Length: 541
Image 1 (cartoon, one colour):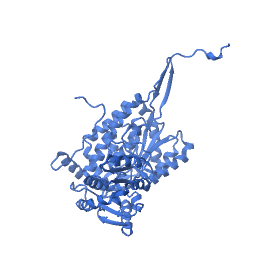
Image 2: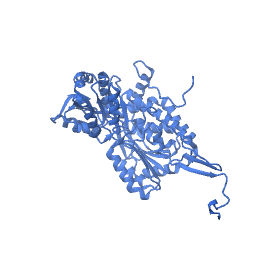
Image 3: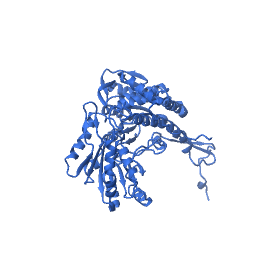
Image 4: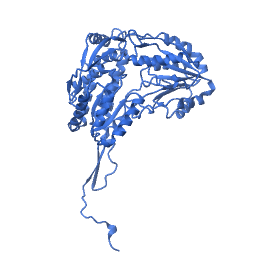
């Protein structure tokens, strides 16, 4: 049997009752619950304990502290930027194969002995179920590391000049950016947190990593894993602390070379403006790569698979507590379909169990923190008193022990109501029910309703309707799904990203993202060296 010429996706463990992986994960959860980790900054490979600390709690049990985190101050931030600059030359000299060896070792460790530690940390730190943690913290990050190495290996051959005339040898050197990349990472996916500093590193950049304040614990475990795999000092520097301060310090350094960002649209736009103002003092024009918000849609045609639509709405909206930038957040459903599925959909949602991530029978857990809880419940409260909106399932919440919000569906008669157009980032789905013969208008409505363009899906059994939606919604989603939920992109299968207010669409999980971190050098070598400065046209008649 021939082996594939590319990596394969990491198999997802099932954690079924009685399985070995279930027992191992439960034991690791118990171990981590019994300790409080002291988390330092990591600067030039050294642990730095600043003494200025904050606590990390479990979202579904927010009275339980799992870590004390030492926050970086200005001195640590400056030291991290300097360390990244100093480390780059040796990192480049190591060569692509040497760099790939480090991150493929990271993947092997995560697939093996570190799997349960990273998964358990993600379950406790970000309140994810075992399956959610397995898909995110283990499988997706393993895939990022393996596939990114694979893509990078092809660049040298793929981008060589097509022509070298006689006497000339032309070539392209695949150089990294000159300087360091600032990686600002989100809480909701451990895999994204690991990928944003490491993807540029594979092609020779060095990174200053600012993790989210809500995922310091799981992200620190990843940093430990990378160091265990042989990551040289200074290549990635781990800096818990103020995003505003870290950005200020990074932009004051002339060697700031790029921003790799996942987070809110408003924050990203502000960072872009700050980078523009900093340009006169920078050595080069920085690369700016960002994946930001989403208001992801499902559009159904009257001829759709109704049970498939029901499953897609439930999973797409409520898995991961809706804390995915790709989560189904608005749906346009024809009246006939809604009449047929709405009662069953509400009944199925009523079966969802929610609670502690350590209880493997739960489908949902808590949202990430009090700020998120207040924001999401605010949207629900405002919808409750609006004449155009009706809450048909869920709507309740409880923050006494953990930040729990019921899976909620709002039906609206106003397609531009607040919860139809604004990103909520929680377990809230808003449905607009349209007349069966109004499909064409609904497609235009979907395209124009939101500034975002991250993910979306169309449900129809007729290819002509699918094609119509495909064309009308061309620029409405960077990841487009046909007869499936608008979420769940897989590395090596559906490179991820969106445009408009959703980001720069540089496609994490594919080669296009890595290309953003290189600065090619064209090289011409003269074999037949000219010996005469004159040209034939200069001769006399």
